[in-house]
Amino acid sequence: MNKQSGTTADNTPHEVTRNVSVAVIGAGTAGQNSFRQASKIKDDVVIINEGFWTTTCVAVGCMPSKLLIAAADRAHDANHSGDFGVHATVKIDGKQVMQRVRDERSHFASYIKKQVDSWPDHKKIDGRAHINEQGLIEVNDELIAAEQIIVATGSSPFIPDGWADKLGDTMLTSDSVFELTDLPNSMAVVGAGAIGLELAQAFTRLGVEVTLLNRVKQVAGLKDNDINQKAIECLSHELTMHLGSKITDVGQKVNKDTQTAFIEYEDSAGESRQWQGDCVLVATGRRNNIKQLGVEHLGVELDDKNRPKNLSKKTGQIGDSDIYIVGDANAHIPLLHVASDEGYSAGNMVCENTEDAYIRPPATPFSIVFCSPQIVNVGMSLPEIQEDPELEFVIGRVSFDNQGRSRVMGVNCGLLHIYACKKTDRILGASMVGPDAEYIGHILATAITNDLSIKDMLDTPFYHPTILEGLRTALRDVQDKMEIPYQSQDAQEDNF
Ligand SMILES: Cc1cc2nc3c(=O)[nH]c(=O)nc-3n(C[C@H](O)[C@H](O)[C@H](O)COP(=O)(O)OP(=O)(O)OC[C@H]3O[C@@H](n4cnc5c(N)ncnc54)[C@H](O)[C@@H]3O)c2cc1C
Ligand SMILES: NC(=O)c1ccc[n+]([C@@H]2O[C@H](COP(=O)([O-])OP(=O)(O)OC[C@H]3O[C@@H](n4cnc5c(N)ncnc54)[C@H](O)[C@@H]3O)[C@@H](O)[C@H]2O)c1
Image (cartoon, rainbow, N blue to C red; front, side):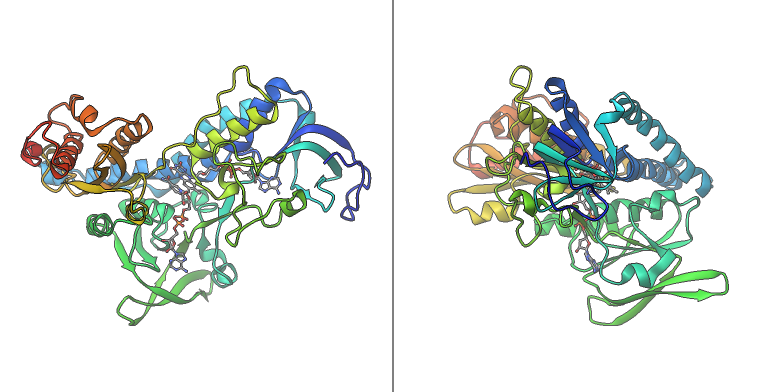
């Protein structure tokens, strides 16, 4: 790829302006990790980024969303303390809520900024990169020939065709919602994936009148029907959801200085309905930023969903080429820890850092949605297990509706399914909605990653009274269904 000249766009030079060993495109979590690792060994590494250098996670993703949820949870606890005989009067200051989200975000961003500021200026290029037909990188007035390229361009909110124009200023996405200076009175959230659920519930808890619409009767993409039904039941206690709705039109009505958004939809019974309110948060998925980049000029083939073919899930390398596609850009698993690991691995690969480099194996699939109760998936999904005729499996279950500590805390709604292999006594996967699911998920991910047996797990102490005892109940149920008589205790006995 070391070509010295080429046909370039009108505003870029026809001669190569610099030759580098490695070019990283995109300075989010994945790109920054790649750059840091590659720079440990090679001096001629550049990183090109358009927009903020403080990562999607910190600027418009994981952190501001969790900050909003933190405020919402405070409001929820205060509003529901009456059940415990503790009566509080709650006043929500929307301006202060949103200001704290941004102030704390700035705090997190300052660490990243400090790191980025420490990198030499000549290695950082602020601009939008494009790969031309010669495989050279065009950015601003530069034409860069790179021996190896790491693409870490992330993903962006997907907005259905025409909605941005029709909704105008009444449309929000996760890119703009954290810039609100006050809480709206009412909001529709479209999409019941991770973003839609987390934000719809958070705004509801903060007193916004929220209506959540989703195309299918499924939340958080849950693939286990029982867990999906339970999640819908638990979330419906406080969230107005219209699942299985088909949106037929969106728009805004302008009346003097005020704008109102509307959504026309057919509900799950086929009835035509209209929603009206202050704004619409579009959370209909994200798409990887790759289509316009020109990776096809590097010999990368994309499938019909714009996912690169021949992707190494360990390093992001495309076949045995000099191209790596990491993080959300490869649309494999668009989560922070995956972007971080892939970026780190690719950075080590390109500089052949065999000294202190450890290329991590692909992580056990693991996701958490931070709604209440939380939704967690670990390892293989139920359909994946069912598709494999070799896998003889049982499903161990526990309900959290009457689980001791969950009831004590007033968070007793939930269900955990553990899928376990009869032949190997190992956990294949799990799906859950319930309290403390983030911790239960981590224990299950550790068990799968480290090949622990059900027996190993049951030999581990479970403290009483904890919500985690629910996990033990499900493990005992697995054991019972496998007919392995390690500990013949009644699976439900430790509910209290
Ligand atoms: C609201 C929200 C909440 C989330 N919550 C969680 C969570 O709780 N847990 C979790 O694990 N994940 C969460 N995620 C997902 C997580 O944020 C992403 O998986 C992760 O940030 C992706 O990192 P990345 O490095 O791949 O991309 P990014 O951080 O997006 O970096 C990509 C960079 O490339 C730049 N770029 C794009 N195209 C070009 C180009 N042509 N030239 C130059 N630069 C370019 C972009 O501007 C950007 O700066 C959340 C996401 C959102 C939106
Ligand atoms: N806690 C977390 O880990 C976390 C939090 C937020 C985001 N994320 C990441 O961000 C990614 C994107 O999240 P997301 O929630 O935007 O996407 P998603 O793909 O998970 O969910 C989108 C939802 O929108 C629905 N939808 C799509 N088009 C629609 C339409 N026209 N009308 C009604 N419903 C429609 C889909 O049925 C789906 O339920 C996630 O996959 C995840 O990787 C993770």
